[in-house]
Length: 398
Image (tube, rainbow, N blue to C red):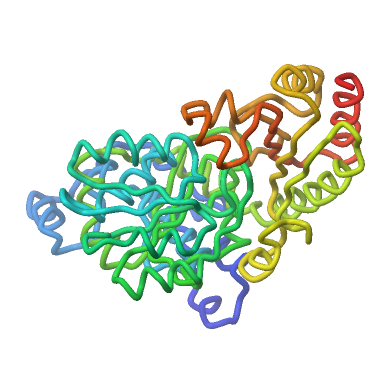
């Protein structure tokens, strides 16, 4: 950022639009795309010095790249983090944030209400490395306390949860963790970076699937891990450098452009989600509507404390079972059936048979994921058109 701008008291939105930009001698308005795998040196001595860390400069795009550096700076500004590293996907961010904080013999406590692939990492992959995992009822504070062991190193959860939109009290759980020298890792993807700031509430590490709202148009995969510089730069960096889950420069550039419109997009999506949730409650064919921004949500007070707005997703249940849910989905025309979220287009999925299909019937029952549960990621369309589409589909099912 320009030195004069740094001296001004600018908003976060303004800072991450302008901060971190690296311009070539051409002084382009939109940052250039650095599609290169490697870099050249003016001399053998310069190459040696860069590899020794004696001088700054890029070595190889698996290690870093100007587009990645720019995006990391902007994300740190937005999140209030000291440092960040990018990964090729959100799941890579989940895995490496966990794996770099534990070793054989350590213990992780994780919420039950998380994305299906996250549960697979915790239940199927990490135990192969001698890492013990305890899954607890996400919103039960006493369960978190009781699960702590002498070897517990990490608390892991997401809030709002996928797909039932439960809200976990970040500050309360983080305080429990700190009392026991446990790190807190939070997946903040549903809240979006501008609407919830976990680091300020006591979390140690925040992760995102940048594929979702940060990109915002369903174009690229990407992930990000943010936290203290000591962890990010002195530990995580080397793991990522040597194992290679690197984000491509082009995808980093796309994410950077997505950040510039993140605020206006999520403003519209949250406004639309609030109106859609209100409308769904009026329909006789809908048996339950879950939206954290409404005062009938079980954790509404926590939402008010730690989030701005109720988020861009709505979960609801229609009358009937799987057949009714599928009939409803198949009648939609504007809202598209997709397991993705955070897109400019409104997307809807049937969690029981898609994102959370790997859960047992008992696990689904505990979370409230039934055959008639649907998760709606609200897009940027005119809200009346989305409502008309939902209304048509529900009328046909009835």
